[in-house]
Amino acid sequence: MSWRRRLAGLLCDMLSASLPEPNRDWALATRAEIAAIEKDADALAFALDAFCRLGAPGLACRLLRAAVKLSGDDGAVEDLPRLGGRDSPRCWPRAVGVASAFAACLMGLAYLAAAGAPFFYMAGNIAALALGLAMLSVVGRSLSRTQEGLGYVLLSLSLILLGTAALGEGASGATRWLRLGGVAVQPSLVLLPAMVVGFARSRTAPAVLAMILTAGALALQPDRATAGALCAGLSACVILRADRPGLAAFTASAIGWSVALMRADALAPAPFVDGVLASALDIHALLGLAMLGAMALLLAPGLLGSPRGAEAQETPFAFVAVWGVLFLAGAAGPYPTPVVGYGGSAIVGYLLSLALLPSRVTAPTEGRSALPGEVRTPPDRSLRLPLHHP
Amino acid sequence: MARARSLSAHARTVLAALLGADGGWSHGYELVRLAGIKSGTLYPLLIRLEAQGYLEAQWQQPAEGGRPPRHAYRLTEKGVQLARDNPPQTAAPAALGQAART
Image 1 (tube, rainbow over the protein chains, first blue to last red):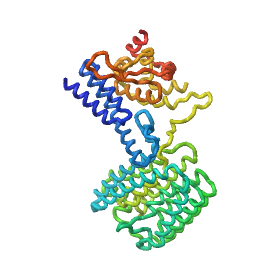
Image 2: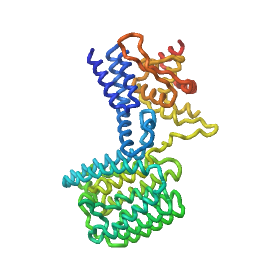
Image 3: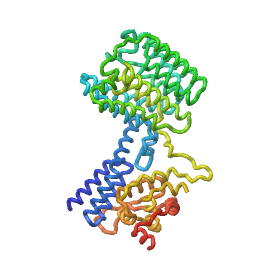
């Protein structure tokens, strides 16, 4: 067998390894075709081109499937992404979030290493990522579909925040932390984003009460950044649907934020935790840009996966508003920079907030019934993909 | 017509090649030559056509011994309709024109 044939066979093996399991037949099909092609050079060109055009999308699809499984998706296995079917990240907001969390944590580790942070800071962030993924997997499965009881869950969580304000660990007049097994945890960063996204899904009376108590807790701690994030998340909910529960929760959050702003916040910025963007820019402009890119990536699950309809957009919109304000606060003031800076609470909180987003959404190009007299175009539009010239 | 605008030129050419088989089965390399495209253009198209129900695929034992089974393709009824609704817009490759005439 010539080297060209052997190389063509190797490319087919690599293609098979790149493709998701339901698409493997296409790698076998390529191998069968090269066996039927007489000229070795033609066989190699056939295999090479198939590998070049299918290998990378196949690998991306495999990674997307892995992220979907990690994100606590509990839907039918046959509906998982595969080439030719639901292979757009827009259909999988939670999986996009998992991928974003991985990428942002990696960039955060690069920053911590470049800034000379102690090794255990990096180890702490990695451990938080693992813990957050485990929690996402469990919580995502149990909370992803049901609205029942969500309000009471939010109420319980708000009591934890209130308890932190009353009994938590303090520093320079701020009482925001709980010490769990020797580790200082900031419950507001762990719980608040998930709570706001949860409220966007379920505006029941217990959920409204939870938001009011949370606003009070953040004013008492005081925590300007998370109080502002709560207000921003609830304002996003009210913008899309201005009903009484939403307005009540928003008003309480606005009052809570105002009180937090008026109270003294003498906490000194912590290195590697606060002001990460400025610190990264001081090290190198590219590192600063990477931090900005990481923050944009972390907003992607809410920006990409917005389904149609105001009600369906509430959760992604609230997600973007909460995290957007937390990033803004971290960039502009002496507040923690979530996920990319040192601090496991925000990493766990980010992954927990993903659990409240839908795992699967219908992409804008899918699932729309044809209108009377209209020729349905969406299934065929994807056929425009292969525009490359032969 | 909306659908006519939405299909790529390559998709139309491949559909025409499959339609030219007149209900018979086609293989990948044969389609590559008929449509005048590369394998990397063909397979993503075939994957989408199959996923959307326009194409059926099956493994066929080759006539000659010692060769692996080949993946063969033909249009479903829905695919035939799609191909008829979306003929190639520009002059089809010579091989395709020849195949369509036979």
